[in-house]
Length: 476
Image 1 (cartoon, one colour):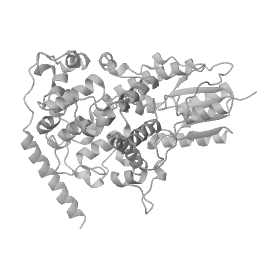
Image 2 (cartoon, helix red, strand yellow):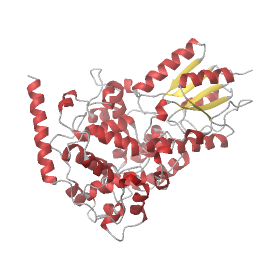
Image 3 (cartoon, helix red, strand yellow):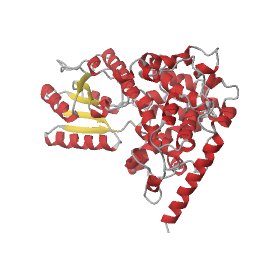
Image 4 (spheres, one colour):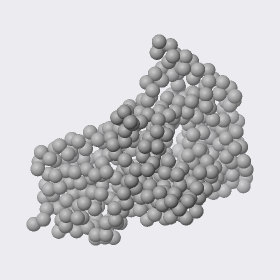
């Protein structure tokens, strides 16, 4: 009797370009896909955990459409894997590789234990284009600056995506599975789930629709239009990419084809993919970037971590329309335009001198496209304490940025209900999503600015110049 193969599903909720599933299918043995809700899932923030649950359900339906299924288990991953091996008699376990330190250590422990049991445990690439350890500088080290890394990998071949898995041999009997509803992955979203649910695009088919739409039109003007938040100029694939509903290789190959076809924005799109690779490259080589200042000298910087201004920033009530529209876009849709992410991060860390970790943790709760490496690096870039960071004297002015990238004010009009009686359902839905304890209403008067932008900039420059002087003094 041919023993079944367990395929441990994680952030790879797709049938196309799925190395573990494809390898398992090639053996001709029964294949049992399994998803385990361990601490790395349960401890996710409210929005990403809820969105993960939607992705799991969609992927389960995809598996069922090809005669397979997805077994759900919760608890310690090793314990659950051992139980499944005993229940099924499986002799092989495959999974897609992880790169976040705690997950890497978990996988190492599980692989060692399974191998000691005589079970063949094997991990596969797929979450990234390039394994972090194979991208090196000319002297053999890792990259600390983006552009040289881009120049190194831009012409590397990644190969075509693996074909879509068309069928998986089912076992004679399926192991008992948890009920996904019992996990209550969306509980922390409360009433916000209904609002954000109108904007998410879940599953591999939705990701396919998005990539087709993007490469059928917006890619041609992506370079010049992607900074304008009121224009539908971006792919919006980050939501699907973070759960593996599309692979980076699929996106890279689509970008390469567009580049060869002469699409003006294709190279910029490919750079954005490599920016994500850069984040994981740093998380692998300098894992402290995920939890503390990448430049350790910044541990002495006088950031604050609490206060009423932070809550007003979270609520989108700073009195700066660009900042507030962005923060409400986040709460309404679960995403935020990339230009807006830079604006709100600069405002929090520089104008308000608030620790970047405050923003990092808020995004971790609210973003449906939350990615641990990209989120950490992005916040540290804005704050000035990370790799390839924005210089300390670069303080984005939300007012002039709005004038430059949204001259007509369409972006605030879409998301700020208090500023216009003509604001629509999208803006009003913010008040249906927020915690009742905030006691907010669209009838509220739009607030005056919390601080003078000029004063905030001056204060930030003084603090950052002090930090620069302190760092210079300590190096002598």
